[in-house]
Length: 215
Image (tube, rainbow, N blue to C red; front, side, top):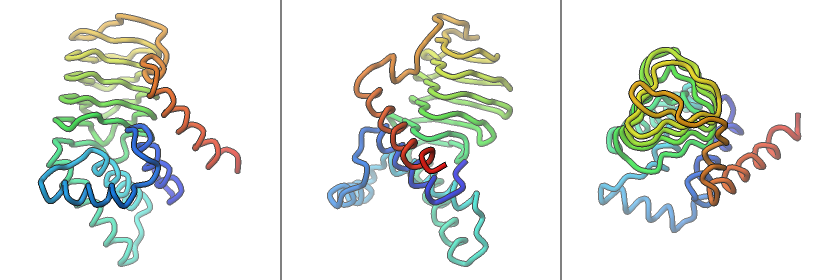
């Protein structure tokens, strides 16, 4: 849950790195994004930024007029872009390094808590409350997670599979209802190799430099 400006900046940066974008948006990127909006073209990177911004202003709940205005603006952007892209994703649900490769229907209940480096493909759903999910979750197209449950780290859910009970870490789940197809999995970004592994390692390095060294 984002509580500080420092965390907000890091979450936005981590999402950009995982998507293969430069650390900071260039003038060329700003212009290109503006033109795409004029043409009715919306991007997941813009949605994720709006989601992180709204999460921050919601969580800190500043009572000043400026704070309320910023919270209202980023809520509008978060909701509006979600409607355009087909996303209904809880703004506090995910840790950093969230990757959404394509637009399309994605639903995630806001009361779920999912770790870092998650991947959501199209037509995926994490519905209902009472879910605690670790790092490196990978949902293939059409995958669903339902009912109160707990999943460990490094869980991959196959296409059109339905998970309705708890599982430990490092498993590939397939079927409806899903069962273990493979065990002892590494994080998805290691299983799939470059460039994903390099991006994840870069994010971890940035985290170490920004947070742990000063503790």
